[in-house]
Image 1: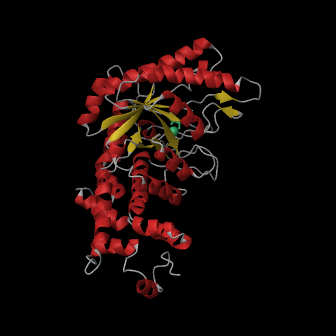
Image 2: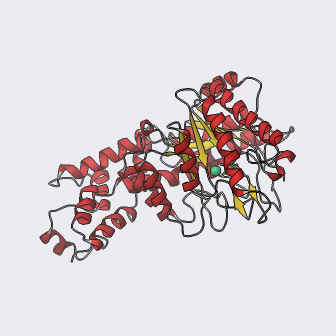
Image 3: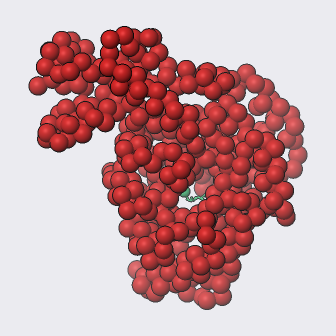
Length: 431
Ligand code: RM4
Ligand code: MN
């Protein structure tokens, strides 16, 4: 049986028994080298529609990714790090200038607290970007030692809920659409608190927040299976998040943070499941080796990222109209931050390009025929395609430099912020 995964020597046999359907990399060559002559139109169509989809792709960057960060052992400060929300917006705007597909920046409250959010939104617009998802923070106050919205103390719960409501006000003021919630809540010891009562408290807090949302606003609920609580977490997994979102209503959706799963978890299954039921609201993209490392997305396991994007593409959920917020949730502890964010955006873009090159017709046919190896081969063929020439061409079409990282390095922006941002308090965890 022909195996499309090996696209070289057995090609003659394949072409003899199958219609002349070029592999993904040959289709790509067709688009970039004018190889289309005599080949089915559909192949060029795949390339063109891939390019159109890539042109419309949107990836949101996190304001906190531009600040100093580190581990609990050490934060290594960097020069030129932003000191204010406006300076973080400047950096996000720089990433967008070089990538062309990162026009929004997520804020974290209170890290990005300002007096006038309307003015901040206007400032962002003047820099060529918009403010995106508003992230609440109920994990850094002394009061939250035993939890925030699930704390046994009603007064602490009230304080946490008030913060969530304040964040909805900020969603209003910034013109954003989404409020994103991640809770550090949980317990460290069996018996420490009632797991079940904490679920009731969580449901109450979510309900009050949900009811405060405007018609076009959403509550996005993130999950994480451990840390900082280690015995149990109150929203440990997608099932818990999904159940709460279902109970809340249509404006509540699940956030998948790729770093928040146990090793070996099949994240693309979660993506497929939630897409099918209309409950996938957003991604927090990053890469992990061991824990919640928040390293550059696609760096450890680009194949996993491809498999995730394949589910997105197959479900027609890539376009911004589908309503899924594709965000990065990363920190750059030892590497230069802005080029690392640029690289991360490109990693998502590359995985997406490969997913767009999957020959969906061939895949469906192989799946229908129960042809396991061909089906897997179709997927691998797309994954093994070098999409960098296509993306370079796309960027040139978009009026961008084909090599965003090199263009950033040449731009002088890094030197500029290094000399300008002297004094003041650099943004960061400050650990
Ligand atoms: C959390 C979670 C949230 C992010 C914070 C900074 O672990 O992933 O999404 O807002 O980190
Ligand atoms: Mn996250």
